[in-house]
Image (tube, rainbow, N blue to C red):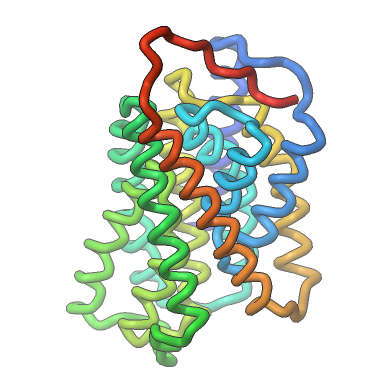
Length: 293
């Protein structure tokens, strides 16, 4: 049933995206090679549980792909369909209590919908500061996980009523924060590990939640000018094969080294974003540079 709901939402999402692109007269050129390459790499890492928001933000800042105020919306819209593919893979591959899965997905979608309404109206500086904090938090979680500070988790595939209530509150908050560019994978893995669940059970929950709340939030961003359709399409076109390679073909990778590399990139992105946010404004307005092609 959940697979069917996600599939229907994906079809509606694509139709809404096409209409939004026509209505807002977005750049009709095809995505550039770098925009597609960013989608391949970030969604490949996302499928491995490393996350895509921090790495996408770093790449967008490094290559100046989109202005900061359109960064979150472009990521939400562009990563939605690749995360749908992830959800299908992990829902089939990993078993988890369907009641726990459905309830956690539902609250994350509600949180994402409400969070997108707030994020789409935030001023540029607020977005920069919020995302800087999120990136620093993501780097902290990654470092702590690499150092073995956080528990490895238990073997449970479900949650007791008390633990489920706590997880529902946290998942709602994570859904709202996702719409502000703060990734939810690292906090989710830590949450479910602390609650005694098998970390593998977190993947179908994360992917299903991520797919549905990204599409719900993406629909709200499509009603605003806060996303770049060309850059988002690059993420989608590159992300789908990246997900398939990571989810279906890759059996083993030296993830420890890879995660340390991601930590360095994330810290760099947070530093650059925070620097942009706190930089004194000039008295004379200077137009923002055009996104790189």
